[in-house]
Length: 267
Image (tube, rainbow, N blue to C red; front, side):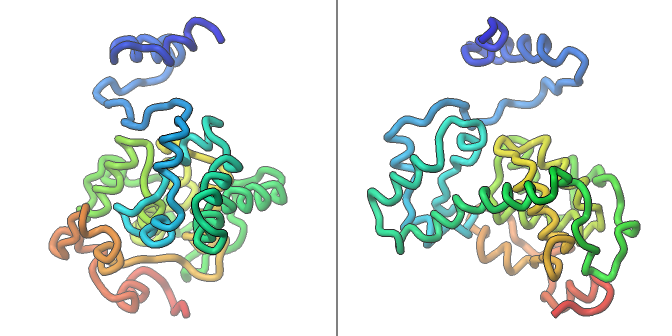
């Protein structure tokens, strides 16, 4: 490990971190107004892993924004903890049946990797046509500025964008909301959204990220994924502003949104 690499591991304050970034990325623009993520890169201790891994709570609350998810995906992505270790911890405390949902979630990464291998690494091309009534050329190539700035007309969406940008991590349910909002509510190509996620997520994995975006978009599924404000309220109301007046684009029944967002019907 070279001395400049040691700096980022041992920086004592923000000034040291910016000096390191200037050294490593001299030709890139660095936003010095941004605060580093609160997620600290390190090898989790045995106690931290034991506390994070609770398959019983995970199975019961995982879909809620404040639910008991491990938040260990950035550490898995960067090799700071291993999935077999997490499986051992889960099964040491709970039965296979109680741990089932947790173990299934760990397996998703392997599934996406296997799909990607079959695609010979081409993860930026539509696998199938959109099933939205629109052609690919009907979608914009660029994210609107209000999405990048977390200034959309919807308070809930802005909350999720802020979490993504400030923490480099966002709950999986919110990832699906953001993907559906970008592609279907704003009619932007999934590739633009996938690239946006890749530039922010600390756990960014190309196969998992891009194929998940394609699933939401319907280019890797039999229908588009959408959500409404009632769904957000059900899973996120304890932390997110779900007032209909503050989320006008999301308010409506699934039938109303389907008729507004797509051409034709989607059973």
